[in-house]
Amino acid sequence: MCTQKMLFVLPGLFVGLVIWSLFAGRGRKARIVLTVFFLLSVCIPVVLTWAAFALQHAGREFIANNFLLNASWKHVEAEHFRKLIKTSRPILALSIVGASVSLLHFIRSAQRQYGEILLFCTLVGLFAGLLVVPVAYRQYYLMPLPIVCLFAAQGLFVLIKQARESAQPWLLVVAMVPLAVLPVLDLQETLKLGNDNQLARLRYVFENTKPTDVVMDGWEGMGVFRPHAFYYFFLHGEFVDRLPREQVDAYLVALESGRIRPRLIAMDENLVTLGSRFLRFVKTNYVRRDVPGQERRTGSEWRKFLKKIVKRNDADWDGSFYFSRDGFD
Image 1 (tube, rainbow, N blue to C red):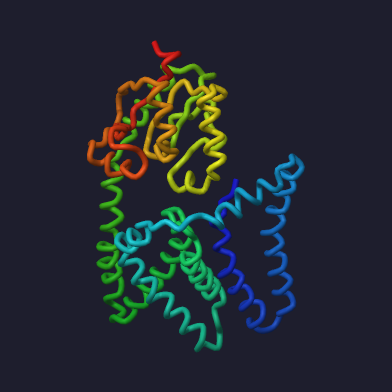
Image 2 (cartoon, one colour; image 1 turned 120 degrees about the vertical axis):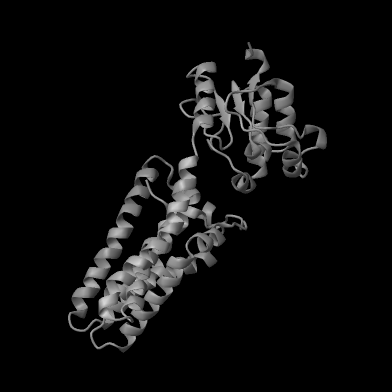
């Protein structure tokens, strides 16, 4: 329905709109009215959505889960920004050229292009958001990258225009070839990837559980079309760290007492972060099955991950499926 990441578009966009509203010459009042209408068009859907949740007595949860929880998220070091730089160096370099030229032209020109300064402010605001957001995953960069590409195209034309006019078309063709190399290489690597293993695992779940059987899943996606074992239907390590300990303990009590009875547990490293008490429960009450498409980790890989969580003799959780003993056949 929405993504909270879009909030990081608003500060830079708002600055650009203020500059356009106040300094674009005649018609200031009309521009201010248009800016106000734009801000209202952003706020009204959010307010209406919150009101719909509030009518269902979930207004507080809407605010807590969408904003407060994300605001208190624990900072985690990620490699996504380095990957962005590594895979997009030529485009980023050209975008710096294009953005710099646009800014200088805006400052010096008598006829200013406010559309470019609006994009520039939005781009700066999005990259400034990296200083605020605890974890900027790859999808965060989907917001600034279209603007980066626009400025990169402008930067490329600026550089090509430095040559003789007759040579410019040929230079454009020659420049486009190396710029297309990295995307082609990434596409080649992507085409090698398949989902055969995941489909095999899903097929196994569907063939060995009923539609009413509870399936407990970390972040494997194996619980699709089956009742979930937990309120949060997917778990990963960062999220488990944000859950109150009493909530995790209450969940473990529900498992141990039988109030929650998963037929199948798709064990992964994210479920392992629930702790040694959960792992003892699984070892006592469930039987492991090897399945087609199972991706196994080496013992050393798992021991490295688990050594801070469980004892060494428990370090054999390798991504298998675990069926409850009382329902095992």
